Length: 214
Image (tube, rainbow, N blue to C red):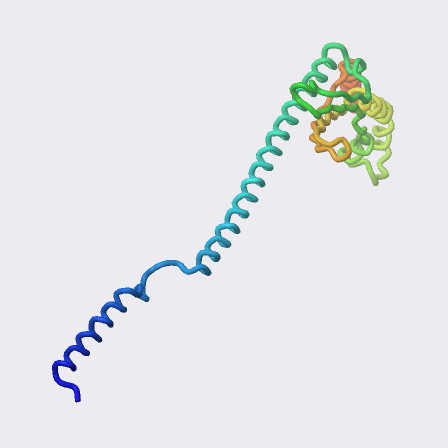
């Protein structure tokens, strides 16, 4: 049989052992991240960095393209001004119909120029005159006579028109020669001698018109 003193000793020993064991184990509710949570965070961070770097790369590419286009616009404007000035000083005949070359490759590497001159299509002045005066489709003998009277000068105006106005195309290309990027400007050149001829022909219309009204 156990004596009361023995029971007290066992109880005290149990309490001491339990308290010692409890103090040796870490608390189960201690805060922190698990291994899976850390891996998930790293994956999300990696995806975000990839998207950010891709956006940054696209932005830099767009900035580069914009600068290249700005350079091409400036070079094309300079070239077309230079050619227009030469045509004004020395005549349109001083320009070749088709020519190409390179810009200063030290300042503008891979940039090239190409220009060509084409006549402006002549409008059908005879049809325009007939439409404006209401002659087309009518059997009025007087109006038909006037149309025949103006036919000669109108034909001369039409011929002079093609000699007086030219289209000047200037194209700037850059980058790969197989698949270059291009920018084009177009302007018109006037030939003074042909324009004077047109002016004289137009003035002759007033004398023809005055003669037909008498």
